[in-house]
Length: 225
Image (cartoon, rainbow, N blue to C red; front, side, top):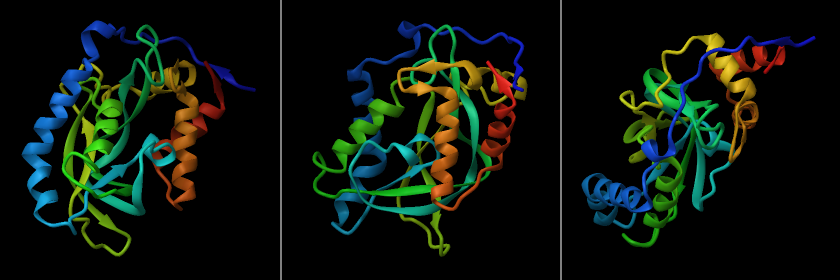
């Protein structure tokens, strides 16, 4: 029999305060691309850009890519450390989603993006990614130290890491709060519980496990919101 979780106090968000306009999102991308990506990608047609997936991008990438490989990022770990007031929760009842937080390493998937021109691909794919991941200040884009299964470094691998100064950062919440948030939240992309289980299954399809996800999933089996 499922044990009912006792309520805990969750933060309340305001869309007007945390959600960026589309012009702000695209301006952010333009600045980042010019500063960190343009010279590398335009210096040779053989240079490739990868995007690292550790959560929903594993089971729902929503963009075109040339290849998909198993990868490991060093210096960051996967963590349910981000309040989600839109995709997997609401402003009044936020859920919790994954992000890369400092320390350790993380197994996931690296997507090699389609190549074309500076304002064709991969820029169009990055526009989709920025609108999906960077519509608030929850993440920071970073070039990561990523390696394939053979231990070979992936030359340019972009990932989205948790922004610890964001009001959505939840890296220090206790496990009881995590379970309560994940068990009962639902947003524009579905329930928070489904997000956890879909990520777990996505990793299993890649022959990967995550102790953080497995532990929460097991405890959620014995609870109800």
